[in-house]
Image (tube, rainbow, N blue to C red; front, side, top):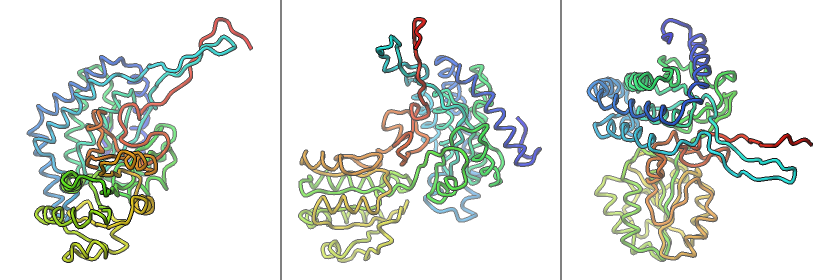
Length: 423
């Protein structure tokens, strides 16, 4: 592959696009055994390269500290031994998933005598633009490869050394399986002009997936000339109903907020029914304070938690990605759902209740990509959903919604069987 330093950005991206389009047909035609061989070889290469990945990541972490990268972004950027192992495990889990390509469904005979059904096929070439998390490089490669797509990856400049090191492992794994290295290409320039080129290459890129902050997704959506699968902010809520078990409510809310602050599935706003606020909030508040979480609360909540900071309108629309939580006391589930509708991002929202009718009503009426009952919002994750990994969590309605795994990176075509049938 031509290096970015040898060409202008436009020429470099055009070269990547041509190579991706050529490779896409080969990876689309690859059988499941070949793709799985590549995935397992990449996983092995990542484990074998743990030391070099750590060294590359240290360079990025040092640069991030020197440039004042936010704590939440530094957390996403860091490659710990556990996260490196997690990348390898994610690749292996994707390899164990059923291969969706070629799957035929809904075969039915029509009055004409034709038998008509649908076959699952790759999308083609997928462009993925993301920030901070270098593990996305491995996850995206795994899911695109398993679904028979070629991909062009453009990670954030803050993770450039980590991403190039992971990309080298991917190239090795593809080569071991006899697949073209161009099936997965990483954009090695940090020039932002490369992003504009990527999202406007209609001849080579079939869909773009931006994974990052709201600003990034907004810019990509506005400037793209190819379809975009949007992953907007994770402004996640939990509503504690009056029928909730107190201990369960405390545990689920605490886990949702403090499992990891920098993930999009972290709870940012807690809604509590006024009937149980005095029972639930003091104990939960103490646990939050012990974890170093700042609580910002509405007037009703501050009557129970007088030391809490007064919440402003801005707090209800803020994805903190930090140890900060806004709390609002509501008079009913309907008011909680109205709040979610007004301020939520359609990502993940949950109810804690012991009342089945309330749970059913909440899951029907809350319009988010994941709606949970008595479970922590931080479970909104492709790995936890059994997808092996995810490229992102789509808050779109078309063509995929929620964690985007292997099947989300495919489409379907109609297949028609006849016996010399004429119309």
